[in-house]
Image 1: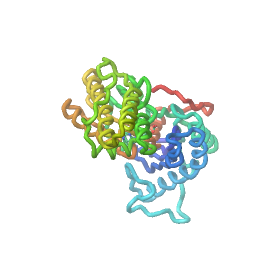
Image 2: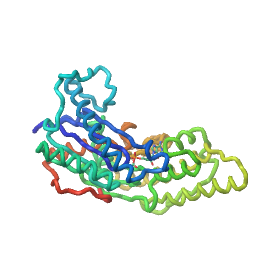
Image 3: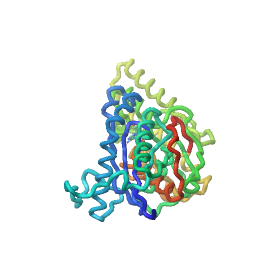
Image 4: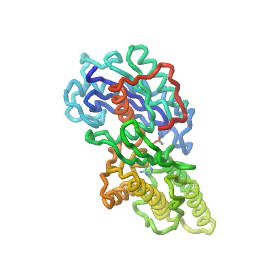
Length: 365
Ligand code: KG4
């Protein structure tokens, strides 16, 4: 099929997501159902709850993605990054309008690794059932590769080589992308992920979960030089990161201030913590760009939505004469649009997966 229609599913953590892509690399739909409210009261993602919520949501999310794609196909005006539930100018489906069915698709794709294995299993089993039932090819996609491809969303002229920083609740990596499918991990965190550090600092401050957005909000009003927090591994001479010491330093600072009876300056703590993270991320990214000679720098993962980080990368890339490519904000966190982008390349290369492929908690790029 020259212009395949592919449905992609993502369920590696706490977002149930589905997207439809067509052969012209246009995302026809991109639906994300977040479970974050169910996990918030526990201060983090509870794997058992994640699996059960995926089971509840997956049919509805896939139906919504198929219906939204059908609306776009009927209007013959493909959108590059549609907000599915509110597409301006696109009529809703009438009761007797043609609907997309599984058998109309040319392939089903799914994230199989890495992530919470009980969460991945739900998407993988569902996608396998759909592929088997509709007798269409099945494609498995690595979640981290999806984040690399997120930079392509809405930017079809984007091509590797590039250095990519992947920063999420579960991952912190610096990757050299020589070409699509040709990746070299330059370095990774040796302990906590960056998003995890944001979540833990927010928890210590009683700001709830997830921590990133609320810490960002306070940081915007604070003084980033008010408190000197450690910049771990800044001069380690490699591309490894360490976040657990920084988190401990912030918690120790909070405990000491409280013990001394002083009121906490939450904006200053958030701004100073964020700056400590950003300084190390940006310094290592700059070195990676110089060492690889890559003309482009990209971001991925939920933390890529952080405004201080985005601003610092804008400055650094301008100084280095490097093109900065950032995914649309909605595509920074987990989504299925990025999985669909990978799946389309796999489909074109004829790389299909066996229906006996298993979900994996670990999965290298
Ligand atoms: O990629 P993602 O949605 O899920 C995975 O971890 O795979 O990333 C979620 C993480 C959380 O740790 C959240 O606190 C963090 O991204 N995050 C942020 C921001 N928005 C989300 N961290 C810093 N600043 C933000 N604005």
